Amino acid sequence: MKAEGRRQKAEGFSTPLLLSAFCLLILQCSAHPRDQREHLEFWALGSEGELVAKLIPEFERRNPAIHVVIQQIPWNAAHEKLLTAYVGEATPDVAQMGNTWMPEFVAIRALDDLGTLASKTQNDYFPGIWATNVVGGTLYGIPWYVDTRVLFYRSDILAAVGFPHGPRTWAEWREAMTRIHEQGRCKWAILIPTNEYEPMTVLALSAHSTLLNADGTRGAFSQPQFADAFNFYVSFFRDGFAPKVSNSQIANLYQQFAQGEFAMYISGPWNVGEFRRRLPPEMQDKWATAPLPAHDAGEPTGISMAGGGSLVVFRASTHKAAARKLIEFLSEPAQQVRFYQLTGDLPARRSAWLSPVLANDSRFLAFRVQFESVAPLPKVPEWEQIATAIYDRGEAAARGVVPPTVALTQLDARADELLEKRRWMLTHVKELTTEAQRSQRKKMKAEG
Image (cartoon, rainbow, N blue to C red; front, side):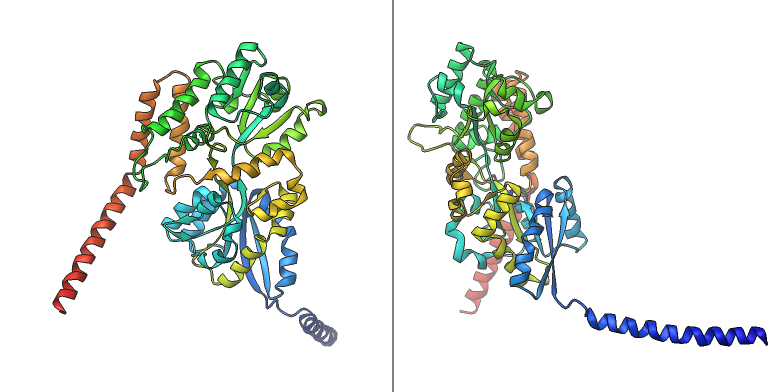
């Protein structure tokens, strides 16, 4: 009886509690209704993935029916993760993408056509940067921020040898290096790490090399334009202007620059901030930036690489209208200026450069000028591997392992090997197209 009483007492006590808990749950659900907003998945890379989150509240305020879910992807894992997501049919709606990856993702039909976003703003973008997002005549990305290479130099040392504003042409460049070398102004006139493909590539672009042939099926490295740039590059090392060292052999770039171990260096916009942070106060008025020297006197500047990051929409997205709204928002000049202030990434739109935070910064003026003379890298999925071959053969020639003519022949052979599949595909596409045209003509003839 006692046991039965305890059981009834427990049941009598627990039932009201359960009812109260159930009612409370209903009230909570009523107070916090299920999020009915459209969820937009955005993959951003590196520090941009963290800092872009500060722009999203304004976007969501303007678009209350859209909620942006950001996933931050490390740069060193991004390429593989994006490919894996494509294979697994789990791509995001919007993603940040390096410009050199664009042809590869276009080739596998992963990206959506963004041509409808072009009409209003295209003329406000730097032409060479915009061109990196056009593959086969179709626009697949919108430039988000831009990157290129310019010349960093010790203004006091260059002034002492007669070039206070930096060399303007290749002839002046060689003369400046010769004077620095002969007068002992620095241990080295220029630092060019032998394991970087970018310096040699911008020299080649400045010499008007196409790097590959017109349809991107073979290397054009033995052609006169690239050979001219390659020989100029090798002469830096042969004539004692540059040390034969790779990045791993450089002890402290900023300290060596401050101590006058070298006077010039080709680099990108991130190093403006690094030079300001790492050089001592007494050095801050002794360095400057300049556009790349032009190949010939009649040209305004050399031609540099069109780099940076773009925003793409994946073909499989079910939120394409919302994705385009986000891209348009992040592309607004005001948002690009704010993003620059957060990240240091340079704006892709000319109008954003009118902001005082950029217009009044003398170290970024060289980049603004250079962006008017940039060119896309070859739009083939194999480019990353070809770029590795460029610095590999450049390093071999710089160190005297092989003569320049042999290195260029080897570079062409390697590029042709990497592009073999592309040649096969293009040949068979042409054959199929020709056969289809023949069939169409026969059909039209038969129909009278």
